[in-house]
Image 1 (cartoon, rainbow, N blue to C red):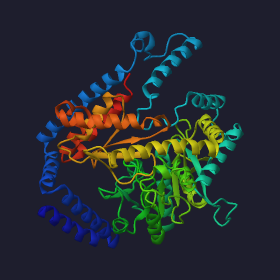
Image 2: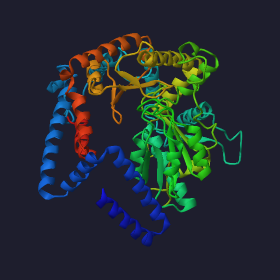
Image 3: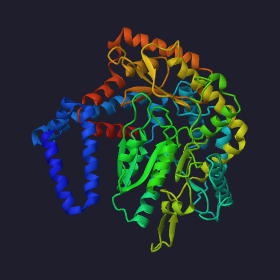
Image 4: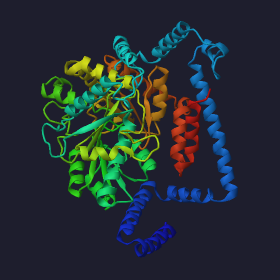
Length: 568
């Protein structure tokens, strides 16, 4: 620690001489983060971390580490491929149903459709029982068929050509308008000064977040001359912000959240902001724990500093406006934590707050649209224009595109429009009420008076996600609980820092809350009684992740997992 502090102090002096106050401020911030990180890690783990970092630089130990990681990666890839192939029926593994090269002759359409119908039926069996966290948000077969027909009618459509597909352009514009209305955005009819709120459709939450980060980066570079842009956000924001920082040359500064409440301290965010900050971000709710960040306070802080604020509503955002309506009508009073107070009132998270400059929400989750449908919205047309890419000197002509993709599937946009128009406010309210009642029943079933001994809920989740962890990790391994639940068909999400599980409730879970709580109670008792039976699988993987001082060593293993997704 003394050597590291001396080196950092020397670097501070040199940087102040070379780059002036801006560089000094940035490195001072790094020093503060390093000190907090070291304290949280502890002296022993910190020494192991630096020892391992040094070892990675030595040729003989570097080679040994790489060989061991390659062995673990290859073993994981083999296990993953075997597990996934086990889900296929025997016929799908035969040569007749395996195509690694184009067939020599044309294949019969009816035969292909018959085969795909069978595959679809078998996949449906894996999730229709309503025991998978998230993934499938509606689940009604007739509704999915309706969306499929809408998509099929426009399967050749490409929004890149509005002159050929004018009705696709119409539906995209109307979906954006409906989303802006849901999230209380001002339209151009309300205020002509800056065009009001606007947006574009994207392929998913990750692309929506990437584009919002790009827009704020480019605007800050254009108007403020910032060349080293920074994003400040809680540690619980989606990994898409890390991807945006990686892709666009930005620095992401993550601020710790309270371990009990899951909330970030606004003062901590303020202390981490610098003159290079271009964007502050928060979630409503976040993916890991389903906690809604203090969006009002964070967005106001951003507004005071003259920077942007992004409200990430990708996961449960489309459910929140309808939860507010249900609560206002008193339809959820009987499932509130304490009906006599406002502990379950949804705090503001959208364009009602003047500091919110961008917002993302996925229609393919609680909007019940086909996969590949999200919307990124802005408080002004001026900001949205920084999202676009334009080339005026390309030999193919003047080229401009709104999102990362050029050509896009118009069928998804049309099917999204069809689903939203079909459901209407009445349909969304009905679906939301069922989901929230199920979520609250699970939340209170874990933490209530007759809750589950050995588990605690993280924070006070207000939407559709409930995260829970072990109160005695040495006695009850939470990842072992996840494995025990898997034996009963429950597919839960494993999370880390802190170690926990979560269930993202959907329409398919409605009516299954009692079965879930019964199985969860049994799983805890099983792991407590037989811990040795649940020491492998995810428990082993996350246990390894927590025991390795330098987590970057796991990157090759994670990349190997992605490799396995595309193996033939």
